[in-house]
Length: 201
Image (cartoon, rainbow, N blue to C red; front, side, top):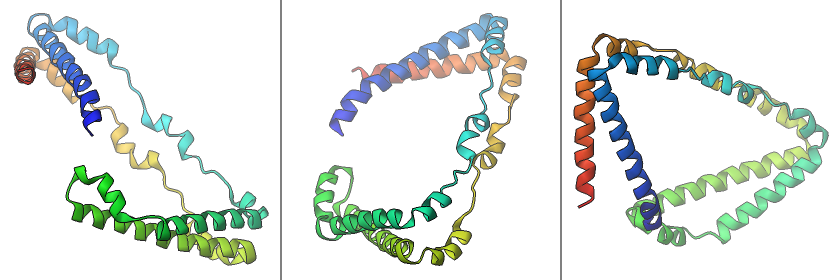
């Protein structure tokens, strides 16, 4: 944690300082030459659609045929992975050792509860994997019912559709009241610069 703070702290400070200086410049330009800022905004105002970027991730990938064709091989691999993981979780994993490694993050009692809960969850999940792998090896047809119930598609594009709509209200507000917004931006930037200067003392 100390290394992360020493490394990221100065970088974050520089980013905040650059943002405050940029805000001050933009605020002053809004006060004295708002037309220039609005022209810059029109040039830089490019729309990037997350829906288009997520289109490739939203296509379902069909693996059922390969799994059922090689069901014994897949089942043996899953079985071996589950056995190895269960052995590590039940006999080679100690919650107290993990808690000691993360003791700087908070209370040891709470960390122990969190890590033990995660361990139990993983143990239960691997027992379920053992059962599924055994069925894959010996009776894959028994998995058809579970598969038909669990085989659903969840679209990230549909859930983010409302976030992917252009909203021009901030632009309209700046265009209608450039001097008021410029004054607020200048004051906010000066306040941020003052706060950042205190960190140097």
